[in-house]
Image (cartoon, rainbow, N blue to C red; front, side, top):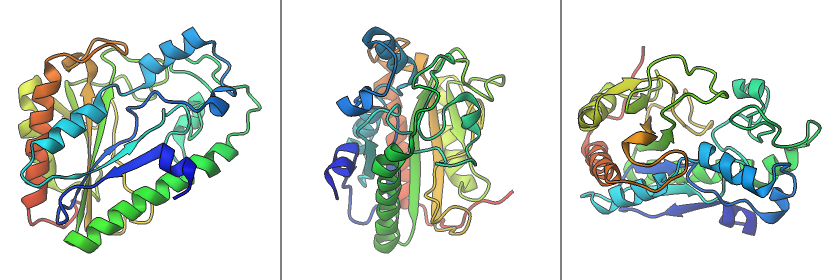
Length: 275
């Protein structure tokens, strides 16, 4: 692993036989100095943007959940801000968020302001960070398939209480916990258990305001041994917005996530759900 990849992501081992990977892609605020040079915001404006765009404390939620499980999951954590690259975007014209300047390399802010110059070439960042990150996640999933015969990716995110201008599909419900499901990769029992364990936070919803879940392209839509579910926690449930400290809700969320991980670790289901 080269130095850039080692700095950009970290795989934290769990139990050798665990099929579960907690994927935390948007928790960091770190931006390398040479990448910062390509961002036109002044320091104060950048800190404010990081408050809005960062899924604050989600790495801590995942870590505390992992420590409470009977079978410790693996954790794959992005060590850099999504303002460097967003590992959950398509790196090409397939990405719908390009419409608001937020493809794999963002050129606009959450409020539609200029983040990078209009003629900024993001391809070097894609080559330097995006593709190696994707390869590392793919390898982590392959390792779980080899060790456990299946893999379960639980994607840990948060989202703001109030819709931000960049959201393309933000008109729908904003439940305390949004569960992102994929028609192929999200088994019905995994979704049902998530609905149960997170119900106590005021209710859950499915695919609103954010939908789908993350699966490496090598396995996406073709390997039912790979299951996946996205957890989107509304930020007022556990923290002060935007970008403030965590509150008492974090501990309860970690407990619920631990319960979900234990269910996913012990279930025998490997088939993916279909519409």
